[in-house]
Length: 111
Image 1 (cartoon, rainbow, N blue to C red):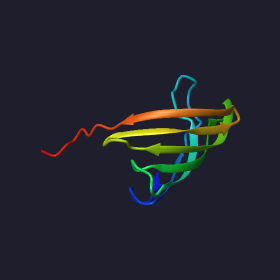
Image 2: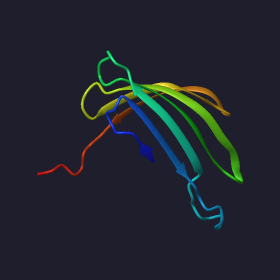
Image 3: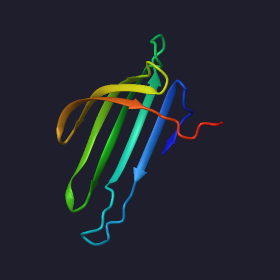
């Protein structure tokens, strides 16, 4: 995954996962996927508010159909280590909304 500097006004990120389709039926493997996102801070709003839009796809041959869609979201951090995100996505499965709460714990704090 690549991204511009964290905390910058505009952020661009992309990720690609490729899996080898060979193997036995009992082997577990991840689905191939791709995600391209563009986000930016909204000036004048509190809590480090950001809006982002991305395009994604995931799936594997022989394991259902490939899912491809778009997502738009608004996220903010009301306090340190907490991020709240809500938005809307639409793909082959239909439209839908989402909301999420992320709490970060730093495990390797310097002493």
